Amino acid sequence: MTVAQDQQRALATAVGELLRDSLRDIIPKARGQVSAKETQVAGDVVTDTDFALQETLQAGLRRLLPEAGFIGEEGFEAMQVLGDQPHWIVDPLDGTLNYACDLPFFGASIALIVEGMPVVGVVYDYGADTVFEAVAGQGARCNGAGMLWDAAMAQRSPIGISSGFLALMKGPEAARYNPDWLGSRFRIFGSQAVQLCWAAAGRLRLNINVEAKLWDDAAGILICQEAGADYAALAADPVYPLSPASPALAGQSLFSISGAPELVDLCRRDFVKG
Image (tube, rainbow, N blue to C red; front, side, top):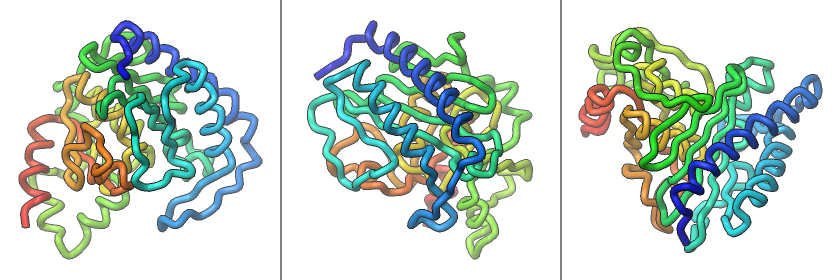
Protein backbone atom coordinates (compact mmCIF):
# COMPACT_ATOMS: atom_id res chain seq x y z
CA MET A 1 0.00 0.00 0.00
CA THR A 2 1.29 3.47 -0.88
CA VAL A 3 0.64 6.95 0.52
CA ALA A 4 0.12 9.71 -2.08
CA GLN A 5 2.77 12.46 -2.20
CA ASP A 6 0.32 15.27 -1.44
CA GLN A 7 -0.89 13.27 1.56
CA GLN A 8 2.70 12.83 2.77
CA ARG A 9 3.26 16.58 3.22
CA ALA A 10 -0.07 16.95 5.00
CA LEU A 11 0.86 14.03 7.26
CA ALA A 12 4.24 15.60 8.07
CA THR A 13 2.53 18.81 9.17
CA ALA A 14 -0.07 16.93 11.20
CA VAL A 15 2.57 14.73 12.87
CA GLY A 16 4.58 17.82 13.84
CA GLU A 17 1.49 19.29 15.48
CA LEU A 18 0.78 15.98 17.22
CA LEU A 19 4.31 15.83 18.63
CA ARG A 20 4.33 19.42 19.84
CA ASP A 21 0.85 19.23 21.37
CA SER A 22 1.48 15.87 23.05
CA LEU A 23 4.81 16.78 24.63
CA ARG A 24 3.66 20.28 25.62
CA ASP A 25 0.64 18.74 27.33
CA ILE A 26 2.18 15.71 29.06
CA ILE A 27 5.68 16.90 30.03
CA PRO A 28 4.63 19.83 32.29
CA LYS A 29 2.04 17.67 34.07
CA ALA A 30 4.67 15.02 34.83
CA ARG A 31 7.27 17.45 36.20
CA GLY A 32 8.11 16.71 39.81
CA GLN A 33 6.64 13.21 39.52
CA VAL A 34 9.32 11.57 37.38
CA SER A 35 10.31 8.06 38.43
CA ALA A 36 13.22 6.84 36.31
CA LYS A 37 13.90 3.10 36.10
CA GLU A 38 17.04 1.41 34.82
CA THR A 39 16.61 -0.60 31.63
CA GLN A 40 18.56 -3.64 30.50
CA VAL A 41 20.94 -1.30 28.65
CA ALA A 42 23.65 0.03 30.95
CA GLY A 43 23.15 3.70 31.77
CA ASP A 44 19.74 3.85 30.07
CA VAL A 45 16.54 4.75 31.88
CA VAL A 46 12.81 4.76 31.16
CA THR A 47 10.03 6.72 32.85
CA ASP A 48 6.25 6.54 33.01
CA THR A 49 6.25 9.58 30.72
CA ASP A 50 7.87 7.51 27.93
CA PHE A 51 4.94 5.11 28.03
CA ALA A 52 2.31 7.84 28.39
CA LEU A 53 3.70 9.68 25.39
CA GLN A 54 3.90 6.53 23.28
CA GLU A 55 0.27 5.69 24.07
CA THR A 56 -0.85 9.23 23.19
CA LEU A 57 1.18 9.34 19.97
CA GLN A 58 -0.02 5.91 18.89
CA ALA A 59 -3.64 6.98 19.31
CA GLY A 60 -3.02 10.19 17.39
CA LEU A 61 -1.23 8.42 14.54
CA ARG A 62 -4.05 5.89 14.30
CA ARG A 63 -6.46 8.76 13.71
CA LEU A 64 -4.20 10.20 10.99
CA LEU A 65 -3.62 6.93 9.12
CA PRO A 66 -5.79 4.09 10.49
CA GLU A 67 -4.34 1.45 8.16
CA ALA A 68 -0.72 1.95 9.29
CA GLY A 69 1.13 -0.36 11.66
CA PHE A 70 3.11 0.88 14.65
CA ILE A 71 6.60 0.16 16.03
CA GLY A 72 7.54 2.04 19.19
CA GLU A 73 10.67 1.99 21.31
CA GLU A 74 8.78 1.07 24.46
CA GLY A 75 7.86 -2.59 24.23
CA PHE A 76 9.92 -3.07 21.05
CA GLU A 77 10.28 -6.69 19.97
CA ALA A 78 13.15 -7.65 17.70
CA MET A 79 12.38 -8.85 14.17
CA GLN A 80 8.97 -7.25 13.94
CA VAL A 81 7.69 -7.87 10.43
CA LEU A 82 6.59 -4.75 8.57
CA GLY A 83 4.19 -6.45 6.19
CA ASP A 84 2.72 -4.62 3.20
CA GLN A 85 1.02 -1.75 5.02
CA PRO A 86 2.73 1.54 5.99
CA HIS A 87 4.31 1.62 9.45
CA TRP A 88 5.07 4.35 11.93
CA ILE A 89 8.40 4.05 13.78
CA VAL A 90 8.31 6.08 16.98
CA ASP A 91 10.66 7.18 19.74
CA PRO A 92 8.25 8.91 22.13
CA LEU A 93 10.93 10.50 24.32
CA ASP A 94 14.49 10.64 23.04
CA GLY A 95 16.85 11.85 25.74
CA THR A 96 14.97 10.32 28.67
CA LEU A 97 17.89 10.69 31.09
CA ASN A 98 18.05 14.42 30.33
CA TYR A 99 14.30 14.68 30.86
CA ALA A 100 14.49 12.76 34.16
CA CYS A 101 17.21 15.17 35.36
CA ASP A 102 15.24 18.25 34.22
CA LEU A 103 17.74 19.06 31.47
CA PRO A 104 16.03 20.63 28.42
CA PHE A 105 17.78 18.54 25.76
CA PHE A 106 15.27 15.92 24.64
CA GLY A 107 12.66 15.38 21.97
CA ALA A 108 10.58 12.83 20.09
CA SER A 109 10.80 11.23 16.66
CA ILE A 110 8.29 9.74 14.21
CA ALA A 111 8.93 8.24 10.76
CA LEU A 112 6.44 6.80 8.29
CA ILE A 113 7.77 3.80 6.37
CA VAL A 114 6.16 2.74 3.09
CA GLU A 115 7.46 -0.30 1.19
CA GLY A 116 10.53 -0.33 3.42
CA MET A 117 11.47 3.30 2.77
CA PRO A 118 10.93 6.46 4.86
CA VAL A 119 8.51 8.89 3.21
CA VAL A 120 7.89 11.18 6.20
CA GLY A 121 10.23 12.03 9.07
CA VAL A 122 9.42 14.41 11.93
CA VAL A 123 11.44 15.28 15.04
CA TYR A 124 10.35 17.65 17.80
CA ASP A 125 13.06 19.46 19.79
CA TYR A 126 11.27 20.18 23.07
CA GLY A 127 13.83 22.57 24.57
CA ALA A 128 13.84 24.81 21.50
CA ASP A 129 10.15 24.24 20.66
CA THR A 130 11.22 23.37 17.11
CA VAL A 131 9.71 20.92 14.64
CA PHE A 132 12.01 19.43 12.00
CA GLU A 133 10.29 17.55 9.19
CA ALA A 134 11.06 16.02 5.82
CA VAL A 135 9.11 14.35 3.03
CA ALA A 136 10.90 12.11 0.55
CA GLY A 137 11.72 14.09 -2.58
CA GLN A 138 10.11 17.26 -1.19
CA GLY A 139 12.85 18.64 1.04
CA ALA A 140 13.26 19.38 4.74
CA ARG A 141 11.67 22.07 6.89
CA CYS A 142 12.31 23.70 10.25
CA ASN A 143 9.18 25.15 11.89
CA GLY A 144 7.53 25.22 8.47
CA ALA A 145 10.34 27.04 6.63
CA GLY A 146 12.54 25.31 4.07
CA MET A 147 15.80 24.00 5.54
CA LEU A 148 19.06 23.26 3.74
CA TRP A 149 22.33 22.03 5.21
CA ASP A 150 24.45 25.12 5.90
CA ALA A 151 28.02 24.26 4.87
CA ALA A 152 29.45 27.54 6.16
CA MET A 153 27.89 27.07 9.58
CA ALA A 154 28.94 23.42 9.68
CA GLN A 155 32.57 24.36 9.09
CA ARG A 156 32.72 26.30 12.36
CA SER A 157 30.39 24.02 14.34
CA PRO A 158 31.43 21.36 16.89
CA ILE A 159 31.05 17.61 16.51
CA GLY A 160 28.27 15.90 18.42
CA ILE A 161 29.09 12.48 19.86
CA SER A 162 27.52 9.88 22.13
CA SER A 163 28.98 8.51 25.35
CA GLY A 164 29.60 5.22 23.54
CA PHE A 165 31.75 6.90 20.93
CA LEU A 166 33.63 8.80 23.65
CA ALA A 167 34.52 5.42 25.15
CA LEU A 168 35.90 4.27 21.78
CA MET A 169 37.96 7.46 21.51
CA LYS A 170 39.57 6.71 24.87
CA GLY A 171 39.81 2.93 24.44
CA PRO A 172 42.46 0.58 23.05
CA GLU A 173 41.65 1.61 19.46
CA ALA A 174 41.86 5.34 20.15
CA ALA A 175 44.09 5.95 17.13
CA ARG A 176 41.38 4.51 14.90
CA TYR A 177 38.43 6.38 16.41
CA ASN A 178 40.16 9.67 17.24
CA PRO A 179 42.14 10.55 14.09
CA ASP A 180 43.74 13.97 13.78
CA TRP A 181 41.22 15.15 11.18
CA LEU A 182 38.40 14.76 13.73
CA GLY A 183 39.71 17.75 15.69
CA SER A 184 38.98 18.40 19.35
CA ARG A 185 35.67 20.28 19.58
CA PHE A 186 33.14 17.70 20.84
CA ARG A 187 29.75 17.96 22.52
CA ILE A 188 27.46 15.34 24.09
CA PHE A 189 23.85 16.55 24.30
CA GLY A 190 22.09 13.25 24.98
CA SER A 191 19.31 13.24 22.36
CA GLN A 192 20.24 11.45 19.16
CA ALA A 193 17.09 12.39 17.23
CA VAL A 194 17.60 16.08 17.97
CA GLN A 195 21.34 15.93 17.26
CA LEU A 196 20.61 14.38 13.85
CA CYS A 197 18.49 17.41 13.01
CA TRP A 198 21.19 19.78 14.20
CA ALA A 199 23.63 17.96 11.90
CA ALA A 200 21.09 18.24 9.07
CA ALA A 201 20.99 22.01 9.56
CA GLY A 202 24.77 22.41 9.93
CA ARG A 203 24.59 23.31 13.63
CA LEU A 204 26.83 20.27 14.18
CA ARG A 205 29.63 19.60 11.71
CA LEU A 206 29.25 15.90 12.35
CA ASN A 207 27.19 13.71 14.68
CA ILE A 208 28.50 10.29 15.73
CA ASN A 209 26.48 7.83 17.82
CA VAL A 210 27.57 4.23 18.40
CA GLU A 211 24.45 3.20 20.32
CA ALA A 212 21.74 4.63 18.01
CA LYS A 213 18.82 2.30 17.25
CA LEU A 214 16.28 2.39 14.45
CA TRP A 215 13.73 4.45 16.40
CA ASP A 216 16.41 7.05 17.21
CA ASP A 217 17.39 7.56 13.57
CA ALA A 218 14.35 6.58 11.47
CA ALA A 219 13.11 10.16 10.99
CA GLY A 220 16.48 11.89 11.21
CA ILE A 221 17.94 9.90 8.31
CA LEU A 222 15.33 11.36 5.96
CA ILE A 223 15.70 14.87 7.42
CA CYS A 224 19.48 14.75 6.90
CA GLN A 225 19.23 13.50 3.35
CA GLU A 226 16.48 15.91 2.31
CA ALA A 227 18.39 18.86 3.81
CA GLY A 228 21.54 17.95 1.87
CA ALA A 229 23.66 16.49 4.68
CA ASP A 230 24.95 12.91 4.56
CA TYR A 231 24.16 9.87 6.70
CA ALA A 232 25.72 6.45 7.16
CA ALA A 233 25.05 3.56 9.54
CA LEU A 234 28.38 1.78 9.74
CA ALA A 235 27.03 -1.29 11.57
CA ALA A 236 23.86 -1.71 9.51
CA ASP A 237 24.38 0.14 6.23
CA PRO A 238 22.15 0.68 4.42
CA VAL A 239 19.35 1.06 6.96
CA TYR A 240 16.78 1.38 4.18
CA PRO A 241 14.99 -0.35 2.60
CA LEU A 242 13.86 -2.17 5.72
CA SER A 243 13.13 -5.87 5.34
CA PRO A 244 12.59 -8.78 7.74
CA ALA A 245 16.34 -9.45 7.47
CA SER A 246 17.38 -5.86 8.29
CA PRO A 247 19.78 -5.64 11.27
CA ALA A 248 18.11 -2.35 12.22
CA LEU A 249 14.71 -4.03 12.47
CA ALA A 250 16.28 -6.66 14.73
CA GLY A 251 17.23 -3.95 17.22
CA GLN A 252 20.92 -3.77 16.29
CA SER A 253 22.81 -0.59 17.10
CA LEU A 254 23.56 1.35 13.94
CA PHE A 255 26.86 3.22 14.59
CA SER A 256 25.29 6.31 13.09
CA ILE A 257 27.28 9.07 11.34
CA SER A 258 25.66 12.22 9.94
CA GLY A 259 26.60 15.70 8.81
CA ALA A 260 29.18 17.11 6.39
CA PRO A 261 29.41 14.69 3.44
CA GLU A 262 33.21 14.79 3.22
CA LEU A 263 33.56 13.95 6.93
CA VAL A 264 30.98 11.16 6.74
CA ASP A 265 33.11 9.70 3.92
CA LEU A 266 36.22 9.89 6.12
CA CYS A 267 34.35 8.07 8.89
CA ARG A 268 33.34 5.36 6.44
CA ARG A 269 36.98 5.03 5.38
CA ASP A 270 38.67 5.07 8.79
CA PHE A 271 36.17 3.61 11.27
CA VAL A 272 35.34 0.42 9.37
CA LYS A 273 38.87 -0.61 8.42
CA GLY A 274 40.17 -3.78 10.01
